[in-house]
Length: 328
Length: 188
Image 1 (cartoon, chains in turn orange, cyan):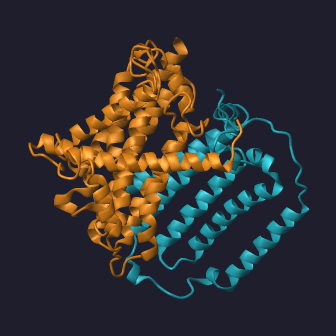
Image 2: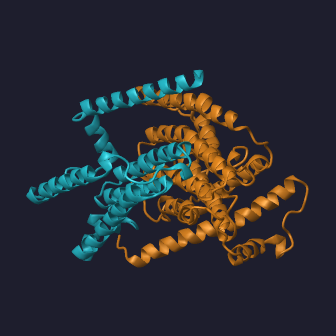
Image 3: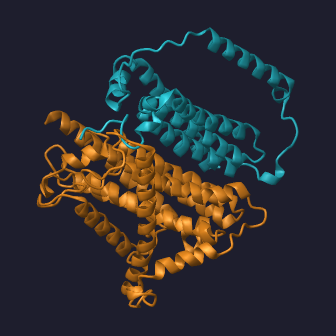
């Protein structure tokens, strides 16, 4: 496998382009979906079906003046949006879109995605603290405490899958599930009877990790204005917005690889990158549907759900799987 | 396709992957990691605002993670990122936010250890470390394992089983301590 600096640059550009394109058009999809659910048209003026809306929004955000509130910590304020985007781009490096389309198949792929995701917490804290705004600080503390709480069941569920597949490599993990729906990790087997439950918990945790409704306590508009990015305008806000959607793409990719067989077809036909994309966009569609269907919970209800319900279940599931793997 | 960590797009960042590019390139990547670590350390020690000190600490930990990756230990590198940046730094940042407001902070020398005594201590430690570095002969040892998760797990549960148990006891004590403090806080 020969490689040059050019290969690396190509991979980086492809990752950034994929993330940016997804971020832009997922915003459009979300606004159209929200419109449909709320019985209004949504953005439909610019271009056919409003498809030119994202570039227009981008131009608007980029030409706006970058405002820094007085008394704010300038360095932290400027670093935070960049820091939230870096893990989102970096995680694309190890995600296998198909058997051949993967930038770098790391042996510790799962750990890398989760490790880089944990950097996002620092960015949110810096953004909240750097803004010198009490709503921002409160929102960032909420967001991070939520992220930390839901990381625990997320890790334990991922560990259960690692136990079953016996590898930390995302590419191998998806390869093992090749050959149809009954081989996917979501289907219960003799050694892992609770896999559908694991899938559900993982789905909930990804929903919470990406700060999506009904877990969007960090930006509860009625309580905290706009959350930790209240003070951000122009492209600073744009980066936070893009990062949120990039995180969603990475989260759904992780669900797809861990539970839904990666690039495999449910009937074992024509495996390839198209199945991967179909799966992640189906999951993203369900994210959008959930956001505009369910009301927001309270912060205590949210934390209680993680510590008192999800973590005991995932721990029990881990022990059960480990025991059954030893027996069978 | 047999994926390994010393090949692929990011493989060139490890010492093995860089071997083809000559010693100079290896040195540049190593120096880059080292510079990040040292800059982070200075930021952590010299920042006027506590939050910036935490940011410096996070940068320092990221630098150490890159050094681990450079040394062909991706598992340790990712663990460093996950535990030290993702958990330890965030916990410290929470503690800083709960501490006294920034405007009330004290200026000037903190205590006896911060003045001449601190300088002497730092000098002695530096002197000792330099002596250690100069007098040690750095032999290139044969590669024992690839630093994989499996190998590290086997070593932890066989050769280093006692240390592993001791660490879990320390963590258990920390958890119990935290629980006791939290209980007292609630009854007040």
